Image (cartoon, rainbow, N blue to C red; front, side, top):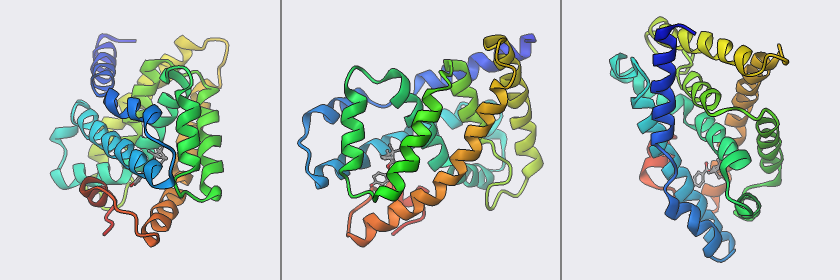
Length: 228
Ligand SMILES: CC1(C)[C@H]2CC[C@]1(C)[C@H](OC(=O)c1ccc(O)cc1)C2
């Protein structure tokens, strides 16, 4: 790892650590009762704070704020769902205090989300959990997801590629260092990004099914997903 790569990694990890889901949201997970309505409101709060965390993390990715402003928005809107699933999968499989993940799973299952979405979601969580990613890998993988050049409406794709490229190179080196006995580990990580893209479709279905049942989203979620 070169000096520049080490500096880049420290910046990304620092940004990733700086923005965590507020503790009060996590605490509510255990306190509130279990009605479908209550669960939906909790998930709305979790999703809203995840998007806020995503925006703050993204702003700290070196070079992001120098991109064309409309492209910055296009990248955020295009990656919000994937970044949210990636972060919740990492939180879910790693840092959840004892018993929280079961409670969260229960609330997700009883929040009006159709079963056809629940299965792929928890399969994804399991496949991320099995990787036992270290923090640096989690942070870099999230930054790489956000800096995907071929999102809809991105005008200057090469500029995004120039930011994403060094992160992919750095992640590749990290994987070799962290998992010397597993040469295909880096490929498995990138495979998760492909699986993530399939979740975009399920997520759109989920939003629609909530909306037809007249559930209300927060303004931030409406804005990032162009609903209502
Ligand atoms: C764990 C998850 C990533 C998975 C189940 C809850 C999540 C936080 C997310 O919820 C929403 O997207 C969502 C969108 C709008 C809304 O009002 C509530 C939740 C999907």
